[in-house]
Image (cartoon, rainbow, N blue to C red; front, top):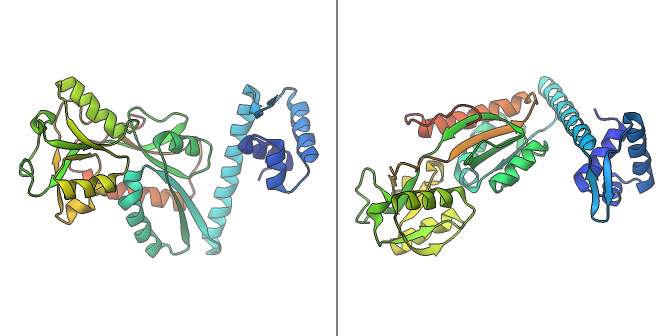
Amino acid sequence: MLNTALKYFLEVVNTGSLTEAAHKLHVAPSAISRMIRKLEDQHRTHLFERHARGMLLTEAGELLAEYARRTHLEAERMRTEISELTQLGQKLIKVSTNEAFGTELLPSVMSEFIKEEPMVRFQLNALQSAEINSRVRKGEDDLGLSYNLSPPQGVRVQYARRMPLFAIMRVDHPLAARKAMRLRDIGSLPVVMMGPGSTLRFIVDLCCMHEKVSLNVVLVCNHQAAIHNFCLGTGAIGFSGDRTLMGSVRRGELVAVPIVDELSPQRTLHIQTFEGRVLPSSVERFMQAVIRRIESYYGDEEGQAPLGA
């Protein structure tokens, strides 16, 4: 458990402001200031640089913040483990994820998990990959699931799998009967694309550049469900990298045809946790349930990547 000085210090780190930290902790700013001075005297160094825009950590402050976060997480783990032994209390598992996994995969696994462990509660945040990495690195979430082109930094990668790329289209589309296809096969047919900044968009653009293909993009959209609905309504071709999002495919509304261009399998799914943390047993069990579900979708394919890849 954090002592008062570290607790006050970590709240200033999280808020970037003495005033905000004091407001959240319901104490006077002067009390927090005294505790920080005490820590700085104890370690004989400055922990913050004071700027008009807030309190910025020094290099020494970064080290102390990492220690404080790890200590806080270990205290939470201890409380959770005791709760599990006594069958009392409520366990909260916090997960951040890309939209792809937050739409169908994780809600499905969570619902099954709660049937087995009804005391567990979940918090699920749908974010961009960089935000997911940041939250896990700071200890704000227990698990992060994200698509990445390179391994996320400052965290422990618990699972990695290279993910395929699919073209999605209506069942009556001229290309729907193909077992596999290349981007050049699309020709001038209308296409829907994710917006810039998406790893899915990056891979499609990379393949087009490599294969010297120019697509006829009629819609740019950052929401996969909307892309699926547009493909249904217009007959356009979209792209997806995740079978777990393809409820419309399982319902027989759309067809998913694998893209086999050389550079298509460049995205990797990473499951990440806080570096150096021993996971609470409930979080470990849930993570393994997620991995088993992913393997049930992709286990028959060459995709298992080395940890950290």
